[in-house]
Every structure is written in C-alpha cells, then in structure tokens.
Image (cartoon, rainbow, N blue to C red; front, side):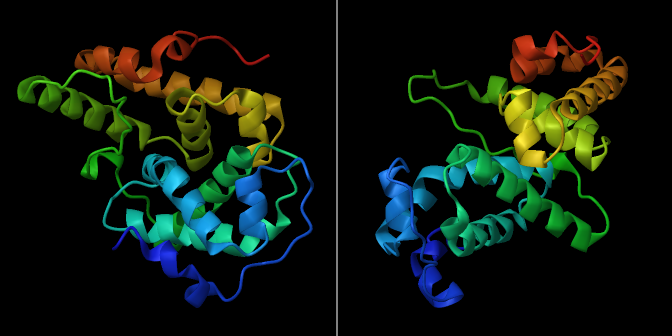
Length: 225
C-alpha cells in the first residue's frame, strides 16, 4: 500500500473535525484540528515510523501492517478534534495505535507470529553500517526473541513492548492502556518472568536481550511495588 495515502484522507473521512484548541497546544496539532490538511500530512510524516513500529510489535505480520497504520491515521484524523492536551500527544497517539491494533487482532481471532517479517527499526544516522553477516545474525536473534514475545498474552505483550522496547515509563503506559500504574507494573513483571523463563531454553538469545531490553531488562525479577 502506498505510504502517502493519508495525503488524500479528506476524501476518505470527510472534512476535518473542528475544535476549539487551547493556546498551549502544539501549533502543528492546533493547525490540524483547525482543518489544515498540510499539518495533518506533517503529523503523518513525523509519526508514521513510530506507529508502524508499535503496530508491528503488538500485532505482527507485515502483509497487514500498512493497512493497520493507515487505519490508525484515519482514526487520528477523525479524533484529533477531541485531543485537548491533557496528556502528551504521543501518549494519546500510542493509546489510539494500540487500540486500533488490538481491534485488528481480535478480528483475526488468532494472533500472528512476530518473527514472520523483519521488525521496523529506526536507525540513528550516525550508526555504523553493519557487515552483512553481522546484520543477518542480529536479525535472526531478534526474530527468535519475537517468537518468544508472541507467546505472551495481549496485555502482557503490550506493556512489555511499550516499556522495554519503546522505553515508555509505567505511568505513561498506564494512561495508554487505561489501567492503574500498579497493574502495568504487575503485567510487566509477569511478562518479563514468562519471557525469561523461555529464554533459559535459548542461551543464544542472551545478546538480543541485552541489545533490545538493555538496562530495563536487568530488573526482570523485581516484583511490582
């Protein structure tokens, strides 16, 4: 699917929702709420990769990834007038993204596997180019890790993805998934516990744990407080 489809969202979803926006709201968001299609296009270009990464990590296979990403931005288009700036825009966007992705998962009735396709990743411009062998080995380890992540329940997988892969704090995740912070910490604790129990069967994945979970993964056995 063409990544530029949101350029014609006005024809897909009708006119932009109108809203009276607070003066403190980000000017780009305020312009989008006021009906500036160019502003909405800029929001798409700014957040498309982030949305695609979260969709993939929560849902899985790429043959539907673009459809879900486009669906997310159609929902953003239709709902942005309701955004009041009470939370960060990214928090609002993450919540909408995870909800739309879960809807697609439930329609499928059976979850796909993470490792069917490469994981969308944002790579710093200054990062050195990997040698082909090293890149292939890293992708294999990551794919193996995602196969294990896929065994987790939807709720546990979501908080693990948002916290350990996306680096969001528990408080923000609580807003995204609409659950108490303690519930988020509990889900994260058990998600890590289950994941690491399976990793014990796969010693070769130790390097992937360090690279993907980093220092956050080191607290995997810490009970929620």
